[in-house]
Structures are given as C-alpha cells and as structure tokens.
Image (tube, rainbow, N blue to C red; front, side, top):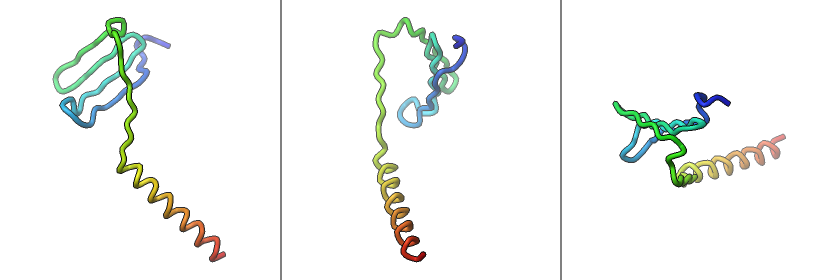
Length: 80
C-alpha cells in the first residue's frame, strides 16, 4: 500500500468542526476544513481514541421498519 493512498475518510457533520474532512493515510492524518489544512504525522500522536456511537433515532426507525416488514411477510403468507 502506498503512503499516498487514503485508507479512511470522515466528514465531520456536527460540532465546531462541522464540514471538515479527516483523512487517514499510512503515515499521516490530514484535516481539511474551510480555508485551513493541517497535517499531523502519525509518529507525533501519543494516543488516539476511536468511538462508535449509535444514533438512537435511526436505530428506532430500523426496528420499526423491521416490524412492519415482518407484519407484511406474515399477512402475505396468510393471503396465499
């Protein structure tokens, strides 16, 4: 894998950095936002925290749509 090939990309959608792009390369982290750009070599990072957060509203919608789909499947089976 080349050092210039992007491994991951994230668009910040809320908070003070809204609209900024974070891009992870093999040897650096790049933040582009508005009219500024910052490059941080990974060797300079002491620690990094990664968190996966659930969006409760989307999870509730998914459960509701799953229930509707199961109801339709049961009704269609009875109507056969």
